[in-house]
Length: 622
Ligand code: FAD
Image 1 (tube, protein in one colour):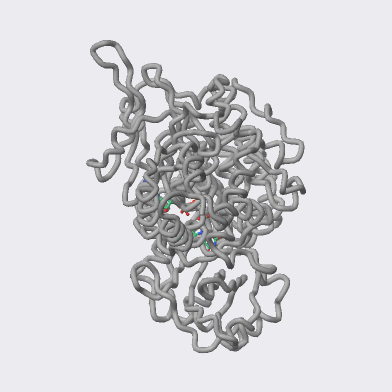
Image 2 (cartoon, rainbow, N blue to C red):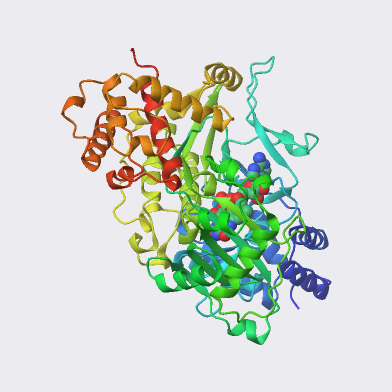
């Protein structure tokens, strides 16, 4: 034995840490290990080196070999690249933790705050080949022996979080659960003229972390969580209702034998979906089944079949009301999900029993992914009294994922590497505008990235973007284009200004009122056109004449309304789409053919499209 006085106890503490299965258990096992080894958890990579020298038996050594190989990469400069940088990360989802690991390798002081206290998501993520390689290199198999065995390319969100949490702790990252980020506290100048640093407003406020000062904030809060100062863009597509469900996996023989379904899209398997619909009344666009800790199914269901099967009680115009709890019959939803799972596995999974979610209810969820949103920018800098703060977004709060393609973690991890690269540049005193311009240049590439168009040699991937994105131009965006991302001055004054500017109209929470207002606006601005009567968001627009009239009303120079042929809806719609895109910068969400046959399923996409005309024209002189 080589590691101190009580080797067996430290080994068993380390093993208990490696195999801990709950977030709180991981943290308490880790504390026990540190206190047993008398190690202070410093929040930096030195901790890892000290831990390594105190724990030197075979099981730990195998992990150190992996982590040493990573830590030795030239990008990290032996953990010196960011040794003076202090980071706060919001969120211990997969992307927040993955970002924490990269920043720790760079030598930064890293603190993660997570508002939840448990990791409870059974849902299973599809992993791109590079993410599998990346997690292997971090020693994933040491923490979770079943990680990507054989041809498996997926993992439950919970397991992924556990693996990353353990790696982050070993690398010296401080992780605080049950702590919510509420906002930034700007630096102040004291009576001696000294400026403090940026801090965070945290809940609970009594947390000693409230005193933590940092110069980098990484937001990995998931979903739509973005800190003040960032704007989001929304792209609305065809109505899409997703259903996820998890069943208990007893790992019995019949369960092991049932084949997974790695993405059955309607266009490729028309017969399967037709049979499903004929026999059960369930009409789906696609379905995926992964076997992991649970039997996990995710499917896109068609609205009419949810109505027919009594899952959705009443049809509604806006999706929020459509899927609101009072409009959903939970029992019928459970039955729908179970029937789809049974049919798609040929009734071979014996007695499906729902796994429970964090509320101890059957783990079934129905959600809308009609509307995908992304942040307009990936980073910004705040400068208050000369104290600069770099803020970067990663994961779902940067780009909302399209789950069937596994983009959540695929693009999520890419963005964490890009953010780490940005922090490295920040620490090496590259000018803030250069850092921002380079970050935006890289961000431009993210949405188009898929496993097929990335560099093929995944072993070579590092935080350096050139190792991952082929032929990337790091100067695609110039510093002159990012001045708006360097925000100088008082954050509170800015918030007040924004509040007083905020328009009550379409931003208003009451969606139906906003729709009504949009409809009124369209009616009044097309009323003078012969033969045009706007009454709804579908039928009235099919001929393309109403949209052309709306454009013509505000910008008569853009099209000749009198030359339009009422019998050519596709031509009229195409003209409106082209003019809007080229002259007004409004991107199409539907094709001219789809517009000519607008159906209820498409109307939300169309409303978002129309609201851009409202935004563009409402301030125009009449
Ligand atoms: P998340 O995993 O959402 O993590 C964000 C974390 O930040 C959360 O733990 C949250 O509690 C914390 N947080 C938020 N705000 C604060 C705050 N103010 N202070 C402190 N902490 C905060 N993808 C798929 O591919 N397939 C699926 O089936 C699937 N199902 C999903 C189900 C759910 C309920 C959710 C939320 C996401 C799902 N996703 C799925 C998306 C996938 O989980 C993410 O793409 C992936 O986890 C990476 O996300 P992330 O780390 O950016 O954010």
